[in-house]
Length: 448
Image (cartoon, rainbow, N blue to C red; front, side, top):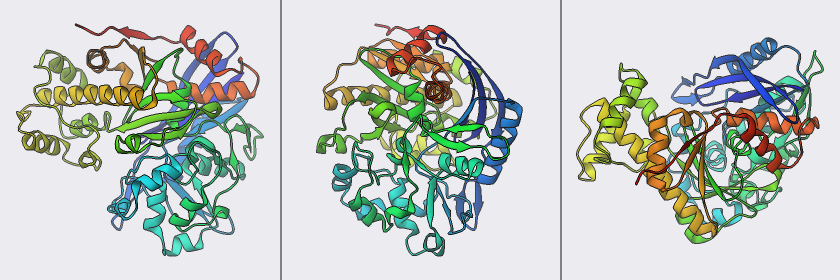
């Protein structure tokens, strides 16, 4: 089977085409396009039509395929009017409109109902911030980003479950909307098209008839599906964000879990992604925007730098917004009474040490709070190419780190489509075993 995965991240989008059988997966990126947010009158937006154009160009480059699936980041949405027309560009989750909104609510009550950690950009808080606006008042449908692009392609609307679970509006661990949470958001259930599970049909592309398949459309859900793991493992899906956790059969909604910042999001086949959001390589990416140094130079210097000289809390919301990341990291070090990194190399080492320690805390907390063992850590996504980060993570966690595949999100997307087409064994463990047998994976042992 020849399958196309549209994989959209916070900085770019790609179209990846794979040839899949029950014993092999080969794939190639056929298109890449920028995802550049746009600020208009003080509000930060996604340029959704430019993204759609990139998707169309990428699918043309892909040529004939048996199926297309789309995944992207979570929580953001577009609104459609009664005619199905888009009511403006979706607002970016880093926009300031949700500042202070979460503080109006009893966070633990929200957590018990939805299982979702209280994060300032949650869809729930975006809707509260938009309450009373003319745009929301005119809306008749709300579509999360992958569903919106699927709608543009097919004319058929739906709401994919794994992404819906990130909104804070779905009942904890279930596949139904929470009436309590919808009431808090001030919206009706009718605003959302029908829920649909990964592996179901989303429609066909108008003009070509190519099937579009619903995948685990939250990119982290696809990435976790693309973890080549077996047995007792933790995962780190490492890119702009790092999502660190374990896979469970049921949510954990204790107060201790809430206070530890863990979220319960749905995964493939009814699994629960029990994880903590860590700021991720965003910290380094933002610093590098202000430096004129190649990544290789920074990493080679950081490898020789003094370890853990200065560390910051990589989950601190102070690092969420763009702009002057070196200054904010320096201020955090100074406030903690630590040496302030004085060079880009020292700053890079600070960031990587901080990430590794944040991963250790998240994994230790996850196995303690969920009561599950962890024997190995799988790091997938772009961060798995960072050998220094992988080694520091193995050292910090005192566990082996298996790095790869880099394209776990796209591969999880592809495997769900392949299963729907009956091209691979249907069991999730068999799908992961196929990845383990066919994809390059590097093992990092902890250093004593």
